[in-house]
Length: 169
Image (tube, rainbow, N blue to C red; front, side):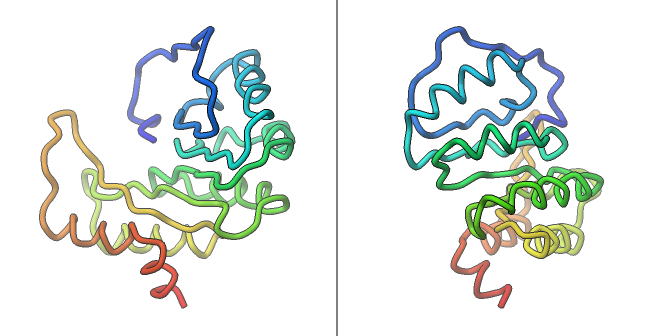
């Protein structure tokens, strides 16, 4: 999820655990060879969950085709910054042709420097309007400084699907 803020080099494992939950938010940044190996393994799985938060700018037609061949239960995208709205819209448009509503979910990063609750709520509502089910994720700095009570309460409102759906009706 914090790909935008990370400067570390990606490590591609030769061996990885077999399973149906992919929590790697950088899978689309990996080499095509590595991604193909992961997707080949996933073809043998059911109820696949991409929980890492795929970076929308890396969703291409080829990626969508690769995903279509998998039995996906939910797919998470990342909306880490206001300037990532256009790539999110494009990714959702590409993916929504093949994935039904509520299968597309979206981590929306909130509470980073110069963010406000009003701006964060706007991004969360936009993520809904664009066609994803948003999930607010509080920013953590390098020192893991605890966010204010106001931010924590706000985040809880946007972290429960039933509450989100009720609020958006």
